[in-house]
Length: 221
Image 1: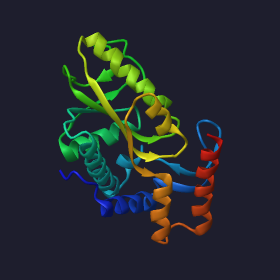
Image 2: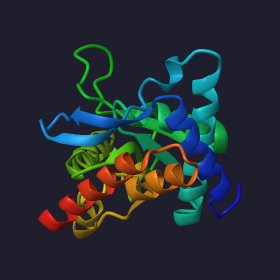
Image 3: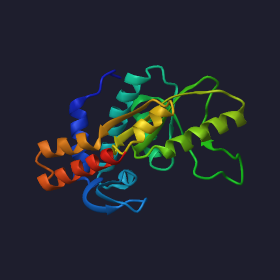
Image 4: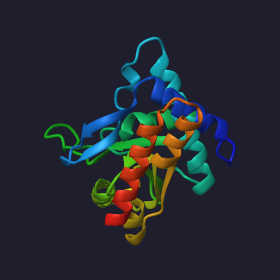
């Protein structure tokens, strides 16, 4: 695995995500109730017909793997954050061979009750995986789950970073940095729309709407 990120692969990936409808532009209501000029939906990739989703996930696994190895070359294990981070973690495992676990939204009432599914070993170097970062709060919840699970198992692991495909540029990275968490993303949303604009796929008005949205978030932070 190369230690640098393949720029042409990044460009191909953004175009594929746009053409497949995984990135949409318009007016969307987010979970917070706020309006956004774009929406990213990666959870459906594995359900796409005609091998489209598998090919995109393969590219995601490759480019995120490159970023992880560049930043944490001796990583032992990745942990996908439920639910959106789970298929991405599996894709990374398939492309790189890095072992993967995932967090649970709820603890089972039967069998083995765990906050993290999968094997972890003493002194493992671990990174978290998710689809995107907005405020960063969910990443702290995942960190807490790892610490609690390790305490229950009687082991210690070392969280070396958080890796997401997209940064929505709404202060999440800055927030997590203040919390002492090394956070990396493959794309900022500004970079993604710039690529699409260069490829003449995104109309000027929609391109500018995203940049204005990002600027408004930065000004209010």
